[in-house]
Amino acid sequence: MKSRSDIWLAMLVDTGMACSVSTSHDRETVMRRVKAEGDSFYTITLPTFEKDLLRSVEEGRIPSDLFRSFSRRKVRKKNETVRGVPEFFGGFLDLLFTSETGVDVDGGRLLPEPILRRDDINVSALALKSIRQLCLLFSKEKALCSAEKIDQAIQSYVDVDKALDNPLEGDIEFLVSRIRFLQRVLSIMYADVISAVEREIDHFELVPAHGPGATADAVRGNSKWRFLTWNDRLEEYFPYGMYCLPNASYEAEGQVEYLPLDAEIPAKLVSVPKTQSTPRLIAEEPANMQYIQQSLMRSLVPKLELSRFGSFVGFTDQTPNQELACIGSRDGSLATLDLSEASDRVPYWLVAAVFGRFPTFVGAISSARSKTVQLPSGEIISLRKFASMGSALTFPLETMLFSMISVASCLGWSSASRSAISRLAGSVRVYGDDIIVPTDKAASVIEGLESFGFKVNRNKSFWTGPFRESCGREFLFGLPTSVVKCREKLPESQNCVKEIVSLVSFRNLLAQEGYSTTIDILDKEITYLLRGRFPFVEETSPVLGRVPGRYPMVIDHHRDHPYLHRPEVRGYVINARSPKSVLDDVPALLKCLVTPGISQLQPDHLERSGRPRAVGLKLAWAPVC
Image (cartoon, rainbow, N blue to C red):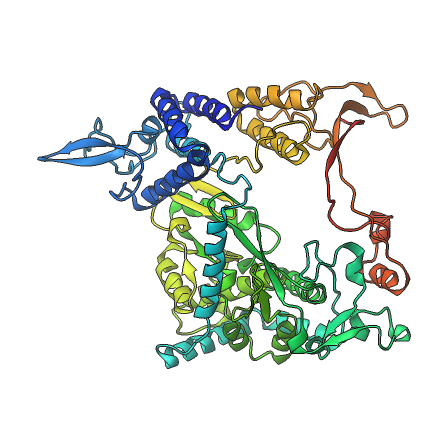
């Protein structure tokens, strides 16, 4: 397989041609830095360059404390020498910032107007996209961090949780008044939704489910439907007989162990691959807690999205956030804010206080909340946060809370009415920790969030320049500057199935962007890895094949199916089967009743269940589209 450098240098050629700039100096710099630093230059150093670049675009100039590991041009200004744009990517940066050859010799200031080509192409936006593509090409490559960085992340997790302990530091009256205002906003925006959820809780009408993830008690597949333990504190709102048995006639005394609080299974904190620089910590929930959390989430989320104020929050569709970010980038009317460690900074006391006027709701979500978590060291700590990432309730609760704080901040924490909140529709929207608010209210929203201990990520929040980012899409002057990233390590052999599948997806995304030089290199390598079977197919085909993308190409057609009369090709398809996990008797009946229609979608669901333990490739005939 070609190295990262081969792919990166091909991308440099593509982006240089697109922007009509010379890249020879950039090529020399990269080869020298990679020889000295290794692949960390691609995975750590270049992403840092991109962060500094976005901060410079946001501020409208290049501050002196950025791009520290890269040399910058020297610019004469009157009787002094100042630092201009970085020499690295200088050709691209000249399309964004002033340089020593420009009229304004105060080097490193954002151009007041974008550069347009004769064909009306915004070259400034294209230059920013090109730099970001080159910097972030391998930034999201999944990898386990070093043990030292994982230990630092775990210690930060513990420290943040400890900091949530005392809500009454500082001005108590100020805090109480803000909580009361949030309660007022809640009563206007989401009271109907929560009341409807409470009715379902009272009448035992919630529909539970198991999530696909691992559990703290190591229960997998269909075994999750055999409830051998049940927490005592779940009984008040989620009785075992109502939620774990098909009906009362199946009541079986002594077949389940009820666990008191001090005997509950704690959530389990684990580190999963993310990037080389940052680990991802997730808390695996016990199976019985996961089961009930899913029931609450499945009741709450659809009602929120369909409510009168559903436009303020998002759970399943990121498109509205992305469209608002585009508008903000074009006219500057909207700001995009991002929070750091959002789920870890939602204190339980705040959730209980704000939603306190709905005791059934608070009681239900509290009973379904793990109160302790086991660290990788084996130590068990009590949680002050509402829930860690991994709980099905974390995302909807934090989204509701952040939306209410954003609305309250926009209203100035003074008066709330249905009409006043309705006027904010279309300018306030929250998707998890991605927040969009009016630009003139951004400072107020940041102050409101920070007053409750939340941490705004200034490096990923934008409100003054022409750049905006939300939910994975980035825009400059209203034009998309999002990039394609390689998500897995490059495959070393034909046995690296997961990596090959990811590389094919990566290649097809690049095809949609028109990076022809890079695609040519990838096509040769993938064709070799797939033993010469890498046909041109439509995007909907199950075959691992080449999607034409921006430039039309002839779709391969190897034969017509003898009975279905459809065009087919011979190629590799993904072969992944769930592991064997037999379920019978009462638990099997419960699963069928709780998930109606599953037998049609997955006929063998009582014999196989869970995530595939291995993924393979199979050579087969398959439809072209």
